[in-house]
Image 1 (tube, rainbow, N blue to C red):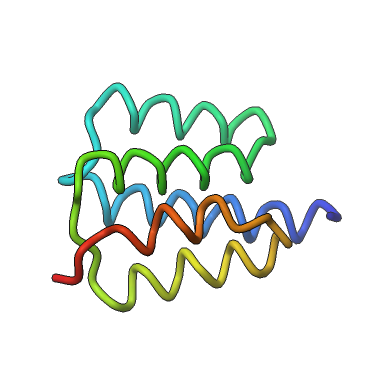
Image 2: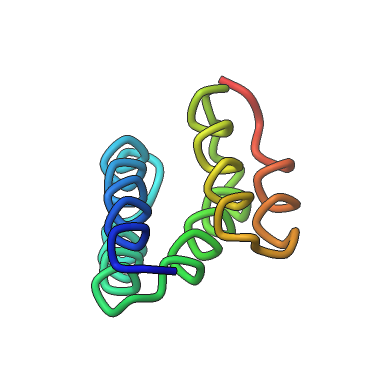
Length: 90
């Protein structure tokens, strides 16, 4: 992944973090932000998906689509996809 690609993905992750702020603990949000800052966007997305699913947090369809688009773009395995599938719809 080149620098421009990374910056775009990091920006999308930060945007998701803001949108999902009311459904993530402050500790989890800080950890996800740290993962983004140190160049671990895949780990950030997996942690975000895991925490949302662990606490049965609902996702709007556009939030789910945006997260799954990042999973696809980063060519991640399906761990995050499985976690997101267990999140209820809003």
